[in-house]
Image (cartoon, rainbow, N blue to C red):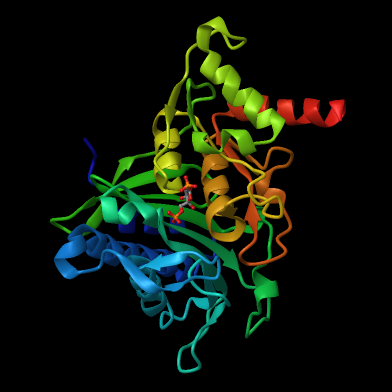
Length: 339
Ligand code: AFP
């Protein structure tokens, strides 16, 4: 059970620890939380309000958009644009960055988000989520460009996700620790239920889309094949496999009981470094995973140190329990040395 600390109270108590805090950031976080509550309500009603199925459009990724992709994106824009805390926004669902309309005051933060992660799950009533990342707008920049967003993940001020599952949860980090909150639907308030979430350093559970096995690079194939070989193989222990097809669900499971999640480079489209996007999936999730004691790499480098080249840039992602991610990194080093 929990002691009833609400997310609002938690954020304000965190603000009091920061000398000189103006309350701007606190208010911004509360606005993001309100947007997630609205999306949760739409997701939970599903076909009752006709929001399932696909829209007649594609996003910049060339992916067919679900109606809820567009609805969730609109919810974020309309919940955030008037608040005066943001200088601009960027979303998986929009080709270009979204400047704050002229009639609203601008703030000192930038927000990137994937409004509905795992949208291929929505029509089958499986878990989906929202991922968000908060950056500072460069000093003195009134009208940010895409270039102003292209900061390494280490510059993130905060990151979090909402998971619309059997219960709606919100998980948040401001860089020091990770805390999880569960939505009390009756009250409409997130309550602290998972204080100081930590990822166990070891695990026996891996998550990857096995159907891509023949397309992976050798170090990933070697790692997964050893997991499958179990106690008779080089690892000397059996592994379990999971695949939720929603990064938010994978990361939440790993925060809750450990594990390793991989969406690595594969040769299906060699020009694409990976499927997941750096600015609003890999970076926020990497900040959360590292703040909970885990690791997050591309295979060869720490994701949070990547210098972004584009707002929709894709990267390979290997994240989770430290010992397993280190092993995958080692296999990449050995393959590079052998080459
Ligand atoms: P969608 O939002 O298009 O469903 O993609 C979700 C995602 O970006 C990530 O959340 C999942 O881990 C991954 O893609 C699932 O990819 P596959 O459908 O190729 O397994």
